[in-house]
Length: 196
Image 1: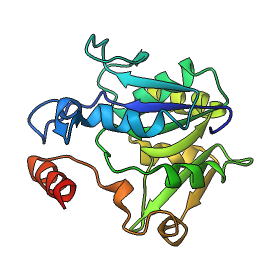
Image 2: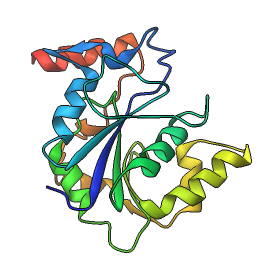
Image 3: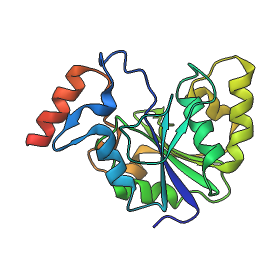
Image 4: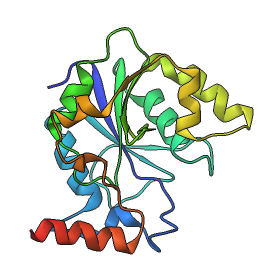
């Protein structure tokens, strides 16, 4: 169990490129959302699901965005505001292959930082990252400021421990944790991977 931390599964995206709510899509015997919850549940005392508005089909505590159409940054803020812990681990619901070993490795890096963010192929991965409760104020300021609201841009306002690819490869040799499903082609590839 990872101490003083709540898992936040981000499930409020509009899934435009997928053409429908991807959190409800089946991969194997469960939905994408159920699969990600299943990975994080054994690691954290509490799991929250971030949504744009309440969904009766989700059998887990939910937090709703306070800022409409503000993307995943609104979800991060909602999770930070509602979590009863000093940290959250934020993970997108469309990352079905995230592995427990990666999450545990990232958790070990928290220390005095405000965020622990993996970097894959030169790109920070803010939707598979740890955030301290102290991130709430600077992230809310970005949301209220009306400027660029992307999670990657928001990292510039935080003290971040970036975990580079060679550290990640030790626990996730194929970097499968970072395979996210944005399009029907991604879903087909994920299903093919499940068959193999």
